[in-house]
Length: 218
Ligand code: SAH
Image (cartoon, rainbow, N blue to C red; front, side, top):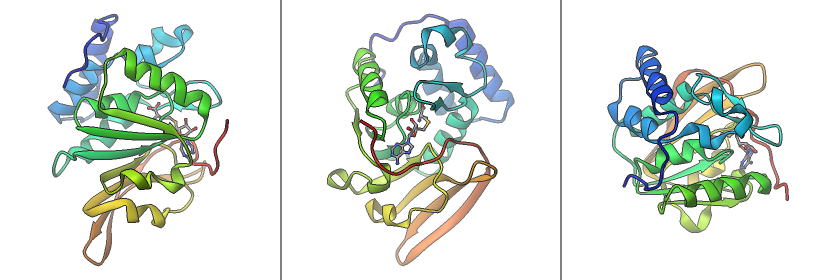
């Protein structure tokens, strides 16, 4: 499934990022392999591309950020933990980096971004890198993507203040939703697992993401 046409620029610095992730307790080889295949420097502005492999969130445009590599790795580990999902929905496409990492591992990736001016460049990146299994659209993530539901997994790469329970309708039974919940002062990464009658919840530690906001920006 490896997309064709991915440049090998900065391969050495990318491998250093992978080594650092290993030291930071990312152990899933599938995740490390996927992240070594995705050129993160092509997801940030050219002026910042020399910093693309540092373990830090970086600004993209419109006041948003590309998530920190460790956070992407950790989220992806949790996604793959039990079974490899076949169909996943991401809320918060941003640069498209997390979706591209998922696109290396998962058959069908859907991603929603509320700022139209971010959706378009992300889509261009997916096309240029040869991904045929990632679809993205501008929309309000709070509404999900009903025509493509149900999903095995839904992830949020922006934080709502409260759990948006209505989205759980778009999950398969046994499916999970992984999301940061909280405000700018305190957020926790949570996994919700959909059971026969109700949900179980697992806490995965403190994180920091930009807020999940309502409405679309055209
Ligand atoms: N996954 C991204 C992280 C981007 S930051 C990456 O790898 O680069 C989070 C993104 O979520 C921002 O681009 C923000 O505009 C978007 N966002 C916030 N609220 C949203 C909503 N309700 N629906 C869809 N996207 C949203």
